[in-house]
Each structure stands twice: as C-alpha cells, then as structure tokens.
Image 1 (cartoon, rainbow, N blue to C red):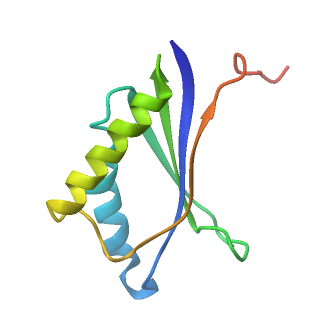
Image 2 (cartoon, helix red, strand yellow; image 1 turned 45 degrees about the vertical axis):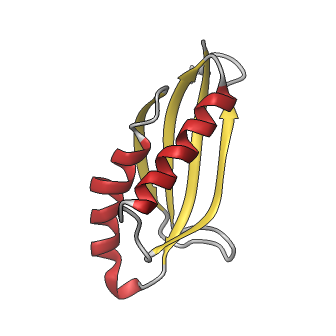
Length: 110
C-alpha cells in the first residue's frame, strides 16, 4: 500500500466571511473529502502572510491506497455529489490541488 498526501491550497473569496468559511470547510468540506476510501485524515493550516498567487489556507490529507487513480476518481465522484447536494460554498477558491507520493520513510531530526 503506497502512502500519499493530497494537498489543497485555497482562499476565501470574502475576507469578511472567513469565520463562516472556515466553519464550513472544517465541518462540511473536509468531512466530504474524508468519505473517500483511502483518505485517512486531514490537517488544516493557515499562513500569516500569503505570497501573491498562493493560498492563505492549506489542507493536507494523508492517503494510503494501492491505486491512486481509483482514489482520485472516487474523490471526484464524491465532490460532484457534494456539489449536487449543496455541500459546496461560493466562498471557496482553489489555488492548487495535487496528490504527492511519499518517496521514503519520514526523516527525523538528530
């Protein structure tokens, strides 16, 4: 079973509604993504001073799968269903999303 991370870098379209956006992202969107078989857990981050062209927010999902293509396809299906069921927010602007394969075990500090 290969280990991957799925990374989503994003912004909120309305700074006045960031609290609402973060509540939705944590309680709705992340939960929808975690419905994908193989996506195990999520950690959310915020940068204090984002660089131009980058997102203020980052979500990193830990993934274990034997077939990343199938995992990616299933995630797409789940996101389509979430959209159709009204789970999406007009406040979300995606900057970058990608799957990255783990190349070896973690490297620890000495």
